[in-house]
Image (cartoon, rainbow, N blue to C red; front, side, top):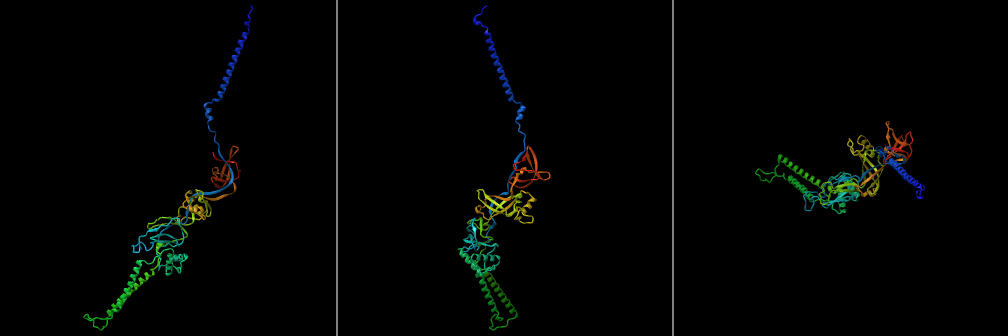
Length: 486
């Protein structure tokens, strides 16, 4: 049988080729699915694996490098600027004739401030601090405080002090022996006049007292004269004068002598009273018109009265013109301080000056009643060794050349006192790196090649949280890392 040309068996082969292509596609799909499953399997973690991957790595020691550097140790504190030698200022008594009943001339009126003192004023010898009832209150140099009126007849160290001050001001009192005489009175009068005031002369009450005493002397003299002349005649029995003298009886004579002696005694007493009063009569310095200050020039630091007030209490505070800084330092730091150390003083706005440590003192007085002050840190060290070592210790710093600090009273300053320095560059580590062995030796832990080695050291100067170390029987070099925490 013959076949047509279109029925060639090659059609079977075409179907076989098509099947092979479908098989290739299926195999490729299987491969891709398998690869995807493998990739997904690599990305999926079990809960245990996920938890393990989120755990923090095992902690290791915290280390810091050893540094070679120069080291300077300082005590740093906060202080306040003050003026040295503060002392209260008050008047020793009334200004002028006092606060008695007012007279016609205005003397004795109630005491009122008519010109108040001014805080910050620099006081020189002879300056007028203030006026009361229009009269001056002078400042003079002297260590004996004014405590009474000074005038004719007074004597003592306070008079000597006044006489020396008058001489320094150019008014010679004629001597400085300590007795207020006419020369001193003249010098006082001239001094007051040079300042535009009248010295305190006898007031109306003094003048009246002088007149009364003089009258008492005159009356006593008259009584004595009358008594002396009253015993020369005798009377008759009938009471009339016989005109002829008759002898006095012994009794009459005794009575007459007693009368004369009494009159004489009265005269003597009157004369004594007059002499005593005249000895104090004249130009005086009232107790409230002079204030003696131990050191001049001085500075009027604070004022507590104003115009119109009665100056019966403290009128202010006076200081020397020297600037000091008072600081409170913990006892452990105070033990490092010594008299004469240099202090750097800096205000908040950058003003600076240098001072010198003058006194390091414990706050509390010693048991024997002394002030507890010392010019070194020895006293502070002794006191803090038996008490809280952090207790504040007062440190006074003098400022010979205050410069910009002169006008900074009560300002806060940073106080930096250098207490030591290393001899050149030394090995240093943080304080936290120092450990103490059971035998009391200091040591550091050094990390080397993943292991920690202990090196014993000798500790030296410390400052700003770091400390000088010297290897003791081991090796330690700059750049190595010491353990400061686990």
